[in-house]
Length: 174
Figure 1 (spheres, helix red, strand yellow):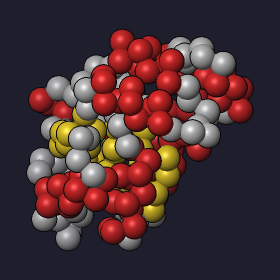
Figure 2 (figure 1 turned 135 degrees about the vertical axis):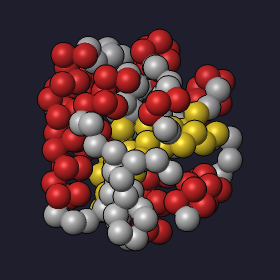
Figure 3 (figure 1 turned 180 degrees about the horizontal axis):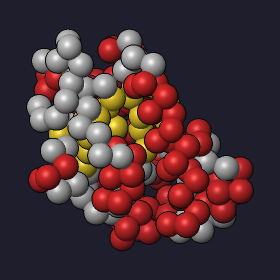
Figure 4 (figure 1 turned 45 degrees about the vertical axis):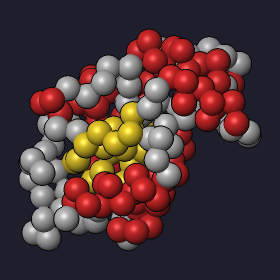
């Protein structure tokens, strides 16, 4: 692992990123449970107006995302500053978003959940009760800037079960 860690050798936070349907929420929640770390899904920080906009099939702009990303980063920063560890799930499609969330910190480990467009589409088609419609996947894929080598992301393929993905991440941490 690169970057700063806590005395126990662990990153202070895991930032789990990927497009809709990649399993971020499920994997993030399982990781937080297994590690005993605080957890938040970035979807919790969307305004009602932004949720409504997406629900009607309109993607958010960079300007729309600014206050949302700021709120996510502030929460993560507060948890880490209090001496606790955190798991945060967030689409963070663009490099600039991830850089902002990490704010130059090296104690945040990026975990990128990668899947084929076909697999992502099939997962979204099967998902019910979520504000994010499957039709917006194409806009996310168009905006996606996969993590570069200098981001030191742990890339995990999503065709595995959530438990297997969590086991892969945990093995990287040991």
